[in-house]
Image 1: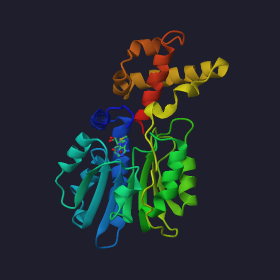
Image 2: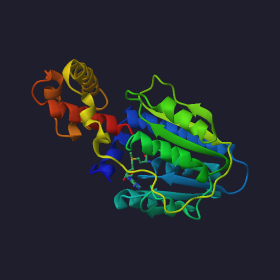
Image 3: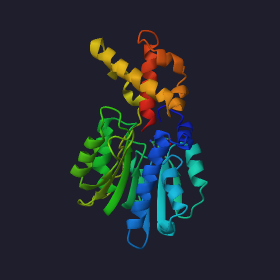
Image 4: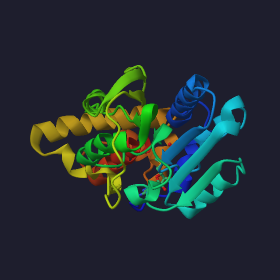
Length: 277
Ligand SMILES: C[S@@+](CC[C@H](N)C(=O)[O-])C[C@H]1O[C@@H](n2cnc3c(N)ncnc32)[C@H](O)[C@@H]1O
């Protein structure tokens, strides 16, 4: 993975009103609506990088269609996978392995519902494109993909929507751009494609590879000031935990004169960015 504590990452879900808690709620609403919409009969679900599987499993716990669901959750972290397995829901299988490898979906696709949540904020744009382009291999005709991507500038959500459309999907729903998270739902209306085993779709990158993006000179200084304002807002609000996690003192960041601790400030900003995967 990328050195991040992905078990700890999930704790933000338990902070009421946090960005991640609100994102989880939006994703769960979309999963509920998707399950409501499926024709009677078996429903196949696949979740890439499933984490603790809270998005799907908390919905299934009370949804009438859960008896029809056959779910395949792929997660690399054994601790997160163990928590997902602990739900004990019949029809739910948790596979500890690499969700980027197409081999790990053989026999489980095409699915009616594919979850790509918490992935696109942790991989390069090229890997997002590759994963979206491969989505027809994962989706049954008429199947739905629920995906997430943070809205930090540059906001890639519109581009991701366009990539889905180019891959044979139509937009069903996308979260309001004014929200500090992005959730999208696309329906597969294109030509079905068989799964191609032996392909790696993405690689999680450390700190989103953005540390160098700040740049030098006046532009760099402007971006740092913007970043500083962003962090200040977040420290004062719901993302305090995310900032504290990387070991920075909120006071330092709030006072930040952009001369000392520059790297720290950038690292903090980057970590916050990554937290909204
Ligand atoms: C941002 S979390 C998202 C978890 C879940 N999908 C959600 O939205 O709540 C990313 C998860 O991907 C897992 N992960 C990272 N790289 C992975 C890989 N190559 N294959 C499977 N899981 C991976 C991490 O362990 C972590 O649980």
